[in-house]
Every structure is written in C-alpha cells, then in structure tokens.
Length: 491
Image (cartoon, rainbow, N blue to C red; front, side):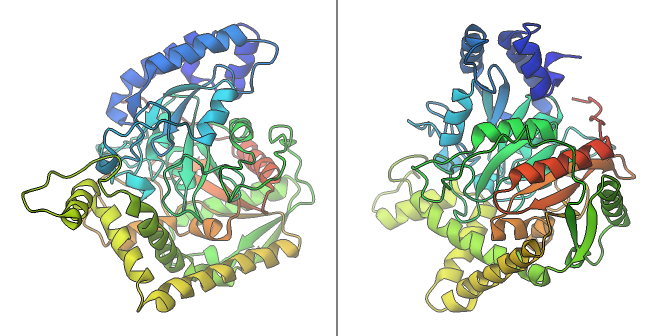
C-alpha cells in the first residue's frame, strides 16, 4: 500500500509512531497528483508550501502537535488561501491571490495540516457535475465503460481527489448538496455540518444563508477528525454559532440501540431507479439490525424544496456576485473608445462569468425585482420556513436521524446533460436541498455499487448541532455496509 492510500486516522497513527514522515507522505501524494493529471482534480498545485508545512510537521511531532499534524489535504478553490490563486473556478477571478487566509484553512494549518493545492469545482459552486469550471471538467476516477463520468458537483475536484487517493482528505462546500452528491458519486464520505458550525469567513460566497463548508474523506472516522479541526466559533462570521465543538471522533461508539431512525415517505420519488429503492431498504435493515427503531415519518413540504431553493439561492447569488465588476480585483474587460463605466461592468461580467452563473444571476435579479419580489422571493422564504418546521416537528417527536437516498442516480457521463433542460441537472439535488434550507447537518455514506459497478450512497440527516450523533449513525451504517471498493486505476 502506498502512503497516499492511507486514511487520515491510519496516517496519523503511523506518523505518531515514527513509521512514516510527513515529508514522505506529502511526496507520495504529490507523485499521485502528477499521475492523476487526467482527472483534472487539482488546478493550482502548491508543492513548495506543502513540503515546507510537512517539514515543519516533522519537526513538531510529539508533544503539542495538532490533530492533523503532517496530514496532506486538498483545498477547494472556493477557500481563500493567502498568496495562492483562489478563483472559485471562474475567469472573472483570474489572477486573484488573496492577502488573507480563510478561517477554515487557518484552523487546518493550526492543526498541522499540509496543503497540496487547490481543487477543481463548478464555477462559484453553481453546478452538480463540475462542468461549469473555467479549468474544464473534473473527471470521476470510477470508470465502467468508454465514457468519462462526472464526479458530481460543485465539489467535484475534492471528491475525485479523495476517491483516487491523491490526498488524504479535502475541504468541500455544500449549498444544496455540493458535498454529499459528489461524495455519493465517487464512493467517499461527505458531511455538511449544521449551518453556523463552520465559519464561512474567507470562503467565496454563493448563497450566504445556505453555504456551509465541510470535510470530504475516505471514512466516517476521518470525517469526524477533519470536522473537529474545521469547526468552531468565529467572531469574523456573524452567522457562526458560539457553541462548543464536541470530540466527534470520541462519539463514534458504534452503539445506536434504541435510537429512532425516520424514513420520510415523500422521498419515494416517481421514476426513482429500483436499485436506489433497494439500497435504501438495505440501509433500513442494517440500522434495524444494529438495534435502531425504524419509524415512517412525513415531511409534507418536501416537494416544494427544489423550487424554493432555486429561487432563494440565485437571489442571494445575484447579490453576492454583484461585487465582481472589474473595478477592484479579478478580470477587467478591455474597453473601446467612448466606453463608460456601465460598458465596463457589462463587458467584464459577460466575459468573466460562465453561462450557468449568468443564468442564476439573471434568475436571482428577476425574483428580487420590484414586481416579482413578493410573488417569488417572499413566497420561497415562507416555504423554507415550512420545510424547517416539518423537520422540527419530526425531531420533537423523538426521531434521532433520518435516512434517505443521497442522489437519484449513480454518476452520469460528462456532457450527457449538456443539451438537457437545466432543470434536469437541478433534479440531482432533490434529496439534498431540504437539508440546506432547514440548516441541518447531513452526511453521505457509500453503501454499495449499482449493476454497472458505480458507487451509490445513502444520506443521513441529523438534529441541529448533533453532528456527533449523526457521525455515529453514519459509522454504524458504514461498518454494516462494509464498502471497501476502490476505482480501478485507468489514469
């Protein structure tokens, strides 16, 4: 086994015993990244920074070393990293190198983590297939025929890099499923924490009331370790919660006897593949075998979640993305004689933003406009409140976690949705957006392969702030499913 194939927990133990150095581990990952070029997962490599951080980690080993001392990670291109290109996969931010470090990456570095580089993603995190990136498509390491498959989106580069063992773990962000859907498509674990658990400061904003950063890892234990380092109160983020961070790893007792698992009837979608239905049934059995009580529940407003999400998220995006105007940083269009400031804005934004971002900015501006604000935006906000109330009522009745499918299908081919109605792509988020609208924690766990041999995941949704309990449920599901398959190396 190569060092880059280790889990975070295994590498941590090997480093602590002196069986492995952080420099060796980092070099193994850098070598894997070089070989993994066809996956297009890493888009800005930082080998000098990585090796400096690894040498420092080796010097620090032992007393007082952080929880991630010497662990090499990939960072989604949405996180600002000081002096390193942070483009959000958009041409409008070409050449932008921040003078500051995001809170999440600062916390990871304080814990001793090593940054291998920045990871591919959908432009401004808008997409479910990593096909809107200015760097080109990221490619799923899983391959079952001639096609190149999507790793999911928007955290597609993070998912591909972890699944292909290019790094030991990665950061992702999740606005409507952008950690959980790619995790399911690539056979890894991805957790979206409760809104406010992880600071958003220094992360390029898409929809500020929905965005949440979280870890993407090979195992549930690794997710617990990485989330522990990322989470915590940050006075620089007004939505960050001042709530103590428990020891998530210590919570993995594997005991869920007497816990109540809800099965929402509204998630039985029309046209859902039989394989996903069967997998969901298998997940219920596994949790019941572990001593949990399975309870049928109703979340009646689920069917309104996607429409509400695709009003609220673009509205917030249109406001957040107004700052990319060619005035202070990033791309500025070349202007002709007689062009004024409005021409500069228009040309800069037309050249800098890709089609999906333009589409969402226009939708968002429309639903916020004077004549339509009440008809669309305000109604969507009311629906959001009803969706949150559905979950509150279920949890008040004693449900500990909710089990659902993670995605409506396994990974599809790159380009296969290119000429489809954009709404078809948006349907990929059908099982995940409710969790963001309600601000809840959700995790995707790989539990099996479909008939083609592609990974499928199940989603567990937890009570607010109960990531510890959610991770323990996920740990039980992971142990029972025994998913150990890896993609066959073709790159």
